[in-house]
Length: 406
Image (cartoon, rainbow, N blue to C red; front, side):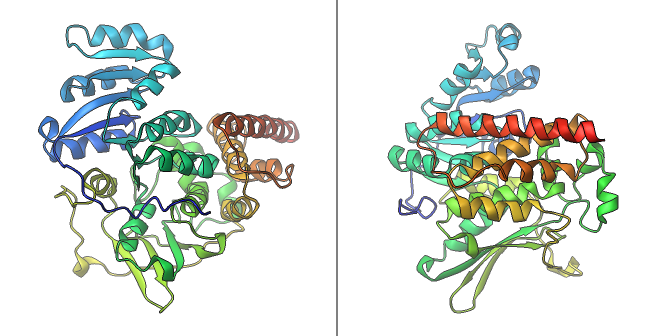
């Protein structure tokens, strides 16, 4: 990877007011972002250029009115009339459908919070990157499925890439001390989710409801289940590869149940730098919105006198094979990230629908990945979507076979 570094650009920019767009404003990340915006001064600190959502139209309209958004888009064409009616008399423009979300992403904004979950967030986030906005990235799939392509658009647009995932945000903060040329390893921490102590037999009986109950973080349904299966961490491994220009062998994962150490970096002199804090996504969001400054945020302060212990142990890849599959995808490169993610999303939907078991999600992904040899990096978004679609088709075939055998 020879393209310019994207995460080590601390050049100061004018601070207030900043023009902000939020892709996925009604989701967990979007709502937390607006909570941070409220605390940092609301309309006095940020001009909201655009908001996008999906089916929670009343919340989307309410957010738009509260923050005086200039443009609002729902990805659901059928919700166009309702959104327009709720915004009647406000002077706020609205739109519906894929094109409207792309339009929102391309609006004049200093920073775009990319919070749309899944591959659906790729095209809008690429549009924002091409325009030159800073990207506060909370969508893993942009880099997992199209890492090289996404980096190219960021470099061409001239914006900065600021990671919002707590783990990558922690690494970004640790790397701010300099010495990148002596970076030896990146250590991503993982809570281990609700099933870190479950046996394989117990995990085979897991339901979507229990998988969605994360012990430390408040997240959406799909992200919570991804965390429970550690597919979330698998995607983060691939994301780190592109964010920080490392090799696959430099990326490690440690299970840390308390979620206090958000991630670490190791240097050639044996030093380890870590970023610590209470588990609250508003810390990473506030860091991205205020960068390169630091904001005063309404998060709980870490009290070391109340910490009885901090535990770390190696993940069990027999019970959590997603990590092994991530290493395979990183080493094979090309479209393997898109294949892994597409198969994973299809398997996740099947698990939520009750069509397959919890452990069978990884079985589906591995079966799909085994169908491919080496591949080239995708040179266009169409190539990414083609790889994703093909992986979903193969995943559907495997899911059907598992159901027939049940």
